[in-house]
Length: 285
Image 1 (cartoon, rainbow, N blue to C red):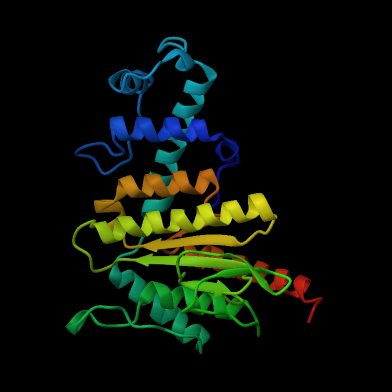
Image 2 (spheres, rainbow, N blue to C red; image 1 turned 60 degrees about the horizontal axis):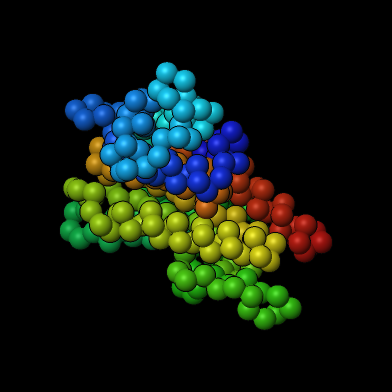
């Protein structure tokens, strides 16, 4: 999923409003398996409850353009999560079946790492294996670092210009001057939405803020992707964090988020784009 161009041009104060309202009214409909769309009255009440001025919102009967745009964003966010994201998130059985199908089809030689489980649950990390297989199948003979064990660095005249704070899950073609980097969050075996899962969202936000600063001050663009899966973890337990992910996407801190089986739809197109960009950088070599 890519950002919605209607909202991706919004200002930081707009996103501050979205966060304040979300904190006050909540992200999900209690007792229902869906995302909440605050009413104009609830938006006003959220401001009042925090002793914030509602002058910029107009009135409930005559909302300002800002209030209308905030409400429209909440409608959009709920729609894409309820109708696009939820159906694409997989459970472990669906992920295993897709992984085995693609493994048989492509016969990958890229890394297919194991998960971190023990006993009967120990197996391939299915979502990571799916992603790696699809990338290898679409980048041709180009190199790819499927498991960077070093910090991502961007250079200028062969000297470090910026180095990111964290190691990422993948980089094309390498962690030095990458065209693209990505994070993978697959949590098929979790039983609750714990702090480790929540931290994964904020880690991606940190990467995005550092890359945004790089582009803003050095005009160097590194494509940034987040790929997440597990219907139970993200949809049953963590819908509020899915809302935050959609916010992060539309604020521009991540270029694209791929949800579950959406990787099959998008990675071939994305990886072909990376390969084309690399040929342009190397003069077609």
